[in-house]
Length: 218
Image 1 (cartoon, rainbow, N blue to C red):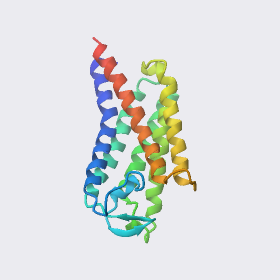
Image 2: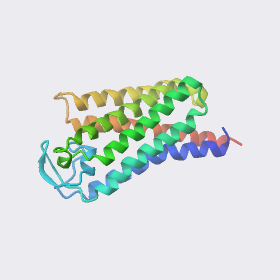
Image 3: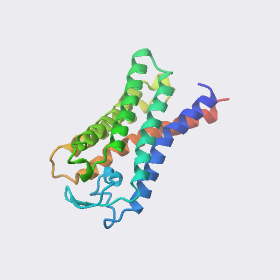
């Protein structure tokens, strides 16, 4: 890859996580149902459009829901675009797998954005689509870490990338499992963030490594 190509991939890999985290922080600041609790409220609570005193044991009111909705879509689009570009360096099998998983992240995030995860989606049953979208996006995003880790040579990444990145993906998948299954270890919202932030972690690491290569490439 040329220096310009490396820089483009590095920027896109970091763009999704940065925009998402910024949207999350801004939406949380605008939260009016008390103080938004990162350890109790789900991320999707920030995208709900109707205020309620009790939904799943959580009071919810997010006036800045359009900001979080934008974050969902931007994240999905950035991941898909980044994967399409990185896939060009991979063998056919991995190229197809990475591209399909990238598309899956976008589709999942679009479902999350279009169908809110609050009380407004219960009567219509649309909350099932929200949950489906979240599951698809989180699973695909963490599976990407495992696939890309196995392709570290083709991507020009250091040896440790083949071990660290897949481990991050596995941690994210475990977080997803604990989010959707009954357990008494910790609040499900904590495991949800582990499952989502793991995706950001491997993307930002990948971005930093691509940027370093770009800087050292003539």
